[in-house]
Length: 177
Image 1 (tube, one colour):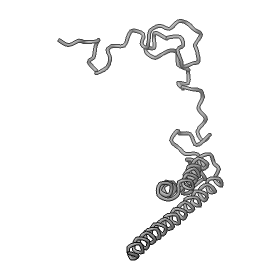
Image 2 (cartoon, one colour):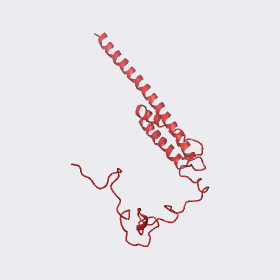
Image 3 (cartoon, helix red, strand yellow):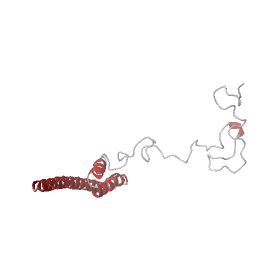
Image 4 (cartoon, one colour):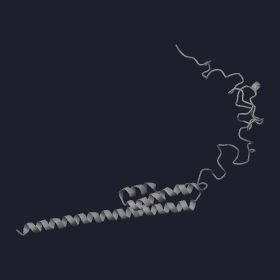
């Protein structure tokens, strides 16, 4: 046994009620022209009286005005964010993250902060600030890399010296007997 909810012959949700839409609306003086204004029973469906132009949210600009008319066209500057015809500078985020993890945490954090500022400044139109943040991010991840290399080399040297001193003291203590 199957349940049926009205005439579903076309795959829809049943027959539309007489007069269409959601029934007779109370008289309200028309509303905003395309909203829930006074229903017109002879015309059929819809939510209320449509404006005479058939338009939706106000008068459209004449063709040739604004950005050329259509919704899909780009503004005259070439579109998107940033400077016309160019891409944002490299933000050095990958190098900043790697040097933070493997080299020098404090300098790497500064580099990550600077690298995240690059795209933010580019999107708001601060192209010089984006370029400066990119250069600062590069400077800080290089500082982190150099500091990490120096610290690691010094650590290795200290470990070698430590084992040499320990080995010398052990051999000296055995040779005295």
